[in-house]
Image (cartoon, rainbow, N blue to C red; front, side):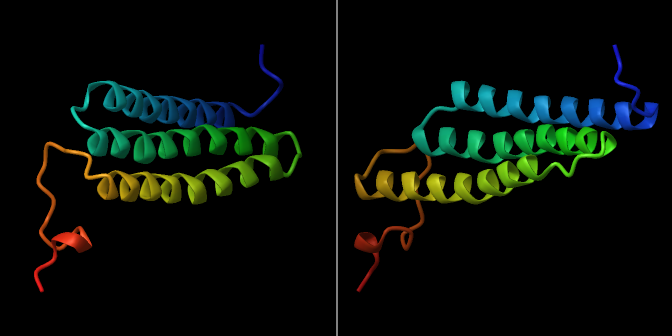
Amino acid sequence: MTMGFHPVIEWLAAALLLLGAFFLLVGAIGLARLPDFFMRLHAPTKASTLGLGGLLLASMLLAAAQGRAGFAELLITLFVFVTAPVSANMMAQAALHLRLPGKATPPEDAVPERRAP
């Protein structure tokens, strides 16, 4: 049952929900199927951030159609878009510090201990 939204708004929100769900699915598949930590870290931080962004955009669109500002959705979006890359970077730095093995060889200047004098 619809809440009386304009059909264009409903279709746009549905498209944003599908796009967000697609990116979330890609992130989940990448997390499950990629072979090492560094590759697994990349999939959910990029794809899931985009997926959650699509879901929150749809929520903001429907909130605006109801006459609400959608301030909570905006705060959630800003929080996720700021914290996801920072936490991924910190986990990658910790893995490099612990010399966690990966499938790909890092460049010679990627880790300070491996730099030539």
